[in-house]
Every structure is written in structure tokens, then in C-alpha cells.
Amino acid sequence: MQAHVGDQLVIESTTSGAARRDGEIVGLHHSDGTPPYDVRWSDTDEVTLVFPGPDARIHHLEHERPGRAHVPAAPDVGETVAPSPGAPPPGAADPGDIGRRVAEERRRQRLGREETARHARMAPDYLAYLEEHPADPSPETLRGLADALGTTAAALRGGGVDLPPGQGRAMLHPGLRNLGRDECRSLLSTHGVGRVAVSSPDGRPAVLPVNYEVIRDTIAFRTAPDSLLAAAVGREVAFEVDHVDDALSRGWSVLAVGPASVVTEPQDVRALAERAHTTPWAGGDREMWVSIRPTSLTGRRITAADE
Image (cartoon, rainbow, N blue to C red; front, side, top):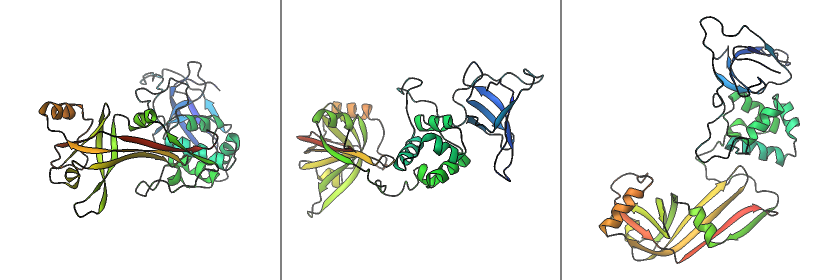
């Protein structure tokens, strides 16, 4: 199948009672005119990335029609998401969350890609693209995939964001392994959101989330001078950060233990403020910097047993 910008893509539905759909091809992704195409649908005026299936045909129209400018190829229009800085090179697998959930659910049910695509009434090439690249499929596409996989569109989109993570099923053969200090330090990254475990003045335990920064071997966060976290200065505290991948039923956690100290030197406070990636999400007057220099740094990761 080959097309030019301005041609009409026609989808002849094979389902009884389903409507025929057509749209104008407004962008090409390959110089030879082969799929996929960016299509502006006549019924919605929306532009989506399309991998034509066997029910599609091209109606070639005259090109460069009067009054219509040529539309150049647009590699990042429609359902695709532009790659972020540092993304893998073109052609490398970099699945989005929806694609990873689709692929994992398909593997759990031992369904082949072509079989799944057939039940979802989509081209196998498009399913492959969806599983290997960040994408935002249309509601109709997502509902078709959900029906084919026996799940819901909300589940494929990661529905339940306000629920605790980890409510999915465990993988068939999980493995739990300890992490070395270097890997723990790498997972801490340079900043993020973690949890600090402290003892309140009445002896009761408390765990509080904080926006944190990592400067060399020190974890630092901002709090208010009259807060429970400020009262923990001078004591040993525990700091924990983790990640749960519900799509693949795996995750990791890192635990740092060490004394909490208040940062008092003006140049150190100024340096931390300048290097901070964000202000505290909780807002308010939180200009007191507290640092934790870990005396212990440990972690664990859940993966498939054969990894």
C-alpha cells in the first residue's frame, strides 16, 4: 500500500451495521508512501496515527489541489508521543505504560500478537507499534484491545491512580534479590519523593513523604522548623524510596538509615536551594534544610526468577 499526502483512506468495516470511515492522509512517516499514516478523520476532524488493515483502501486524489498547501510528513502527530530527551534512538523499543500493560496481559493469557490484533480488529503492525513505543490510542482502539484481552480500557490506561499500588497479580515465578550499594545509590537518583520514618515526641512512629535531593552521599529535604521532621534532627532516622510497576508486577525499594542534621551554614543552604529540582509539593513555609548521611544503604528488587 502506497499513498501521498492528500489521498483519502477508506475503512470498509466488515462488521454488520458498523459505519464506513474515511479521512484525509495529512502526514507520511516513510518517503516511499508506505504505512503508517497520519489521518484526519472526516467524522471527528481528529488526526491519529493509522496502520491500515486488510479492510482499508486508498483513494488517490489529485495532489497539490488549488487552495490547499502541501502538508509535510509529521512524525509526531496524532496518537504518538514525542520522545523525551535521552530517549532510545529511533527504532529502539521504548514502550509506554499502555503498551507495557497490553503486552504483559497478552503474555499472561498466552496470546500471540496476530491473534490479539485480529480479535481487537487492528493491524498487527499497529499492535506491535503500541507495545514498543509510547502512544495514546483512541478510546475505540483501547476498548477493542480491552475486549480482546478480557479486561477494561480503564485497567489498560492504569485506572485506579488513587488506589495503593501493587493491587495486580503477582508474576508466575517471582524472584527477590538484594541490591548492592552502587545500585541503591543509582536508584535514589538525584531527586524525587521519598518517605522519612521518625519517632514522634510521644514515642509513636510516623512516616512522612518529602521531596528530596541527593548531593553526593547526602540526602536532603526541606521542612518547617516546627514540624515533626524538624524534631527528628539529632536522631537516627530511616529514609525509604521505592517504585512499583503494576504493569509487570515487579518493583524495588531502597532504605537509607542515618542521623538527621539541620543544615546551618549559609553557603550550604544557598547551594541546596539553587540545586533543588522543585519546591516542596506540600507548600507552606518549608525553608529548613535537613540532611541525612546514610550509615546504611540497602535495597531489594522483585523480578522474574530467571532474570
